[in-house]
Length: 147
Image (cartoon, rainbow, N blue to C red):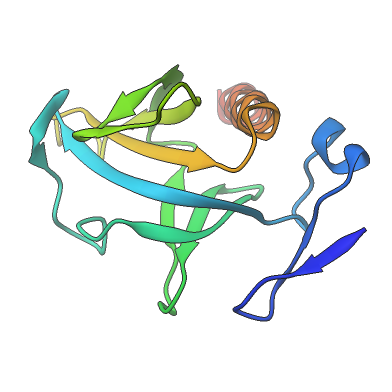
């Protein structure tokens, strides 16, 4: 079953979608911000990462994309820059009231030693788990391929 989202993009919302994630699927969620060095009061403000908001997340072959509604350019986190992933129930001063928040830890570039952590809240905890699994799988595949 497909549902139309206000932006005109479609999203799969059936049980099959929850089992597999491919690059055709975009998942409705919210970007909760990016914090610097784990300090919720210190937010990363470059490259469009300063503005929180609802939008669509997407797992691709080169990284994770999240496009907020009313914006043209998506946020992008390359698998090469991801240091790790995790879950939490709060991020950047926002609490998820018992829901899972996907946390992606990353570094902007190899010269940068500051660790950044971006938080995303999706409409379903099962989808959040599947997105994390897919990101971890693609990170592993990229590390094996690139040595």
